[in-house]
Image (tube, rainbow over all chains, first blue to last red; front, side, top):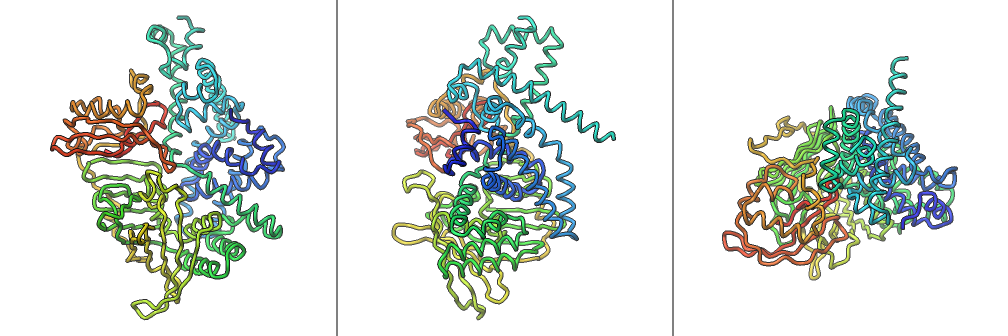
Length: 181
Length: 445
């Protein structure tokens, strides 16, 4: 059975760097979706995703809550995105394409709260959501893989949906408040 | 069924996991209860948002590139702690050209001198084209006219492949083979397989789509250097530099890279695509302008290496006819479905093995029952080429599925007799990595 994020982080810190592969495999797709919501260029998204994972690996020892690895990774990815957009702007200040990319990134900010909300889920809920939607497994396949009854998988999905909806609604309210002030 | 029971079973109902009686009870309750119906709508809306993530990230594969960088950094960190900070920034933090220089510096640390010099030539080549506004590439590839952009076959004749890209005022690109063309017009990438009348659309605009990465990378030297050097460092690929005099009498720097796919020789997809082949890549740079002038890719073969790709024309910063960014689609075009719906009897299909799905698909084709065949396809309606090829076929035998390390597909060997009397023996590629959980034909017919 798969280990938890916390266990993999601790194994990496103990010198099993090859285990970082599992964390990359587990979160590459949601991270990619998160970055694709902020950057237009597919190549930039891939570079930013690689860079985020590499920085995460190099800073693993600084991670205070290993169980929050994914949430922490998104924070790194957010900083990488800002650096990348700022670097692009700096390099091509007089180039219209930069404005277009920046404007596009701003336009698409509604896309990424979903990944942030997924990061805020308890790990057992997040695991089922990732397997179902990012890896494309059926509920039955998830039940087999996690060695859980099918009913537990659907109930976990049901609770995960409820938490996600609450989280998204809270973010929407917060954004509306900011926009109004 | 009351509200509490309905809420308890709602996800199972949406997922099609209830038995017939429970499902009917759930549906009946939803018809009469506005609150539960609202809950049902909210769940399906969220599911649609989530389901869009699967296709959008289906081809993402960062594990090997990340681990290669991690391992190279770890090795170097142990060798030279002072370089650690540089390693953390070589991706793009310092800008593309400076980033390429950092990669070259790493090459000097990791490679013998000759290889490091080859890396230096490539780095200068990247810097020489760092501020391109447009590029046009034209080459010859041993391939099939309508097959994937990266499909190669040493036994095929050469077909022309062309690539146009502009970065200003906005990013647009087009890649074309005789029967397959993709245009990214700034909004989305649309691909047309001409002889099948089949079109694909990928929103939003990207710098690469479908399997065009290898050509995009040739046009983006800075990225090529990063990838080639990352691979060379991690996998021990050899790089060499030679000096030659070109047909124009000018000095040329020739960089040769021996690239390995990492796949075992018996893998089904080995040497079928540029990325899955063991190749020798030869980049020729003009010594004075430092620009890339030509590329040749040779497939490693048992007896002799065979030329499979030759890039013989590169136009830098030339104006591109706006007509290049337009793609005319036939009126009766079939569209590949990005989002696919569950069938009312989806479970029947989701529970099939790859072999059963292959048989069911071919049986539908045999009976020319295109509504049934479409349940195994992501295009709608079924394209005329498939109807013409497979309509009225006779199944001779279906074998046992196998896999490849290079693809999530399962491959099912089959032998069928086509209506024209031809016996076709091939492997049908199927995949089920989408939320409906049922098999879809991904190629091989």
